Length: 98
Image 1 (tube, helix red, strand yellow):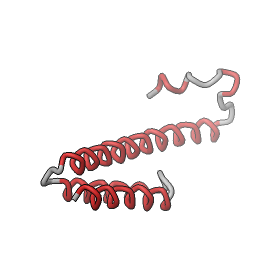
Image 2 (tube, rainbow, N blue to C red):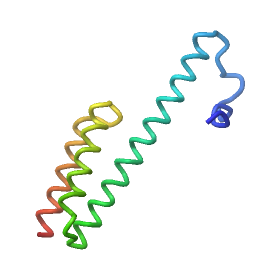
Image 3 (cartoon, rainbow, N blue to C red):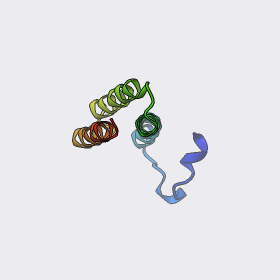
């Protein structure tokens, strides 16, 4: 994590103490957001693959994907309309393949 700090230009690093703290907070939040996005991506892919294969656990995986999308939207990692759109596309795909 500390290595990522230096990806910024050294001239733009904060000088003021509160700005340094804000940068640390921002980096922590960015890491959490990355993890949440990765969970979304994994659950969506799992659901899509299960739907396309006609897997019996597809309903369970769709439910998990819905849950991850709702959590991300609640945390403002993604917009609520994007979460709704992705859930709608999953449902449409599931209906088409059944």
